[in-house]
Image 1 (cartoon, rainbow, N blue to C red):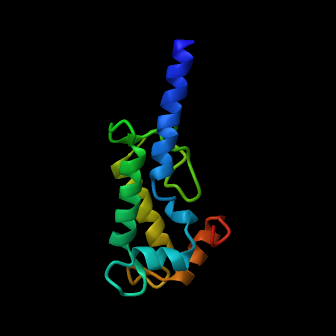
Image 2: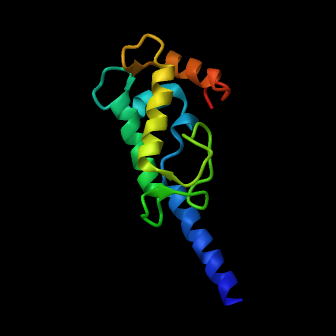
Length: 129
């Protein structure tokens, strides 16, 4: 009985931490994503802006502070970087970088809403998911 209670409390704590994390970057509509993350005001999402968001999400999800996100901390979500768990911060960032490059149709290192929508559609996420 005591172990069941401990397990339930641990799950609730993990769920609470995950709920406080920003949503997966792939679940935010493209226009809203740019509005929220465009720190330098250039009207698009550059690699650093998106990578910083993904990194903040990683650190919030890493509830036990072991520098890895496992399936209990964050099950794979829409456009998450990998289905494999655990995943390190470096692997999480590398996967984001690869996806960013695949979305950057004009190779200007900055994604506009159209590129984000097309990139998501190419990955089978239905565009604005």
